[in-house]
Image 1 (cartoon, rainbow, N blue to C red):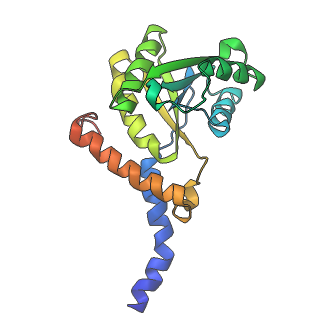
Image 2: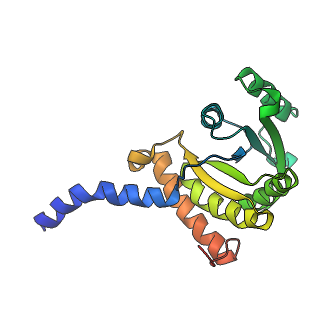
Image 3: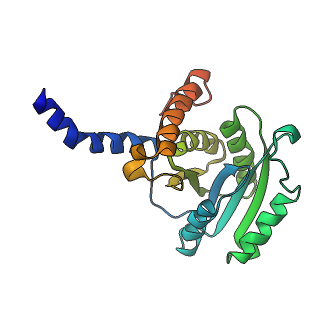
Length: 203
């Protein structure tokens, strides 16, 4: 028993990091643009992650996707011109006007799949061929598979690139937000498979 506990004390980190790595795949590569995955309110850390990719020359443009919530579900006192405010702040952050696009998509269940359909239809219209998908942490696996599945319809290759704000991949289990995200995203990934939102074929 003591020997087993000793082994576990050395092995738990690689095991937990491996599980985290599955939920947050990351690939290198250049693309036409970066998709900053949808949220209702954009956080500074998310924009910083997208900005880093642009200014490192890994993509030319950034699409900031905003979730357009039904009126009764919107954050109280959130300005109705929030997309315009985001656009103004992007310019203050150093982006040129032709380097970014703020895109609002409706929040319709299943949210991630609906978002991907709207965004990739627009990218198909723009003749985009490769896009970096910038998602927060453990949400990346589900988003990546959904975006990749929808991207195949338009001949668009998706490159996953997670960013971290509330927790870090290396020690996520020491942070309540990391634990919550880990458990939630594994459950949601299973749900997407069970409902058929993600095809088992090729995954």
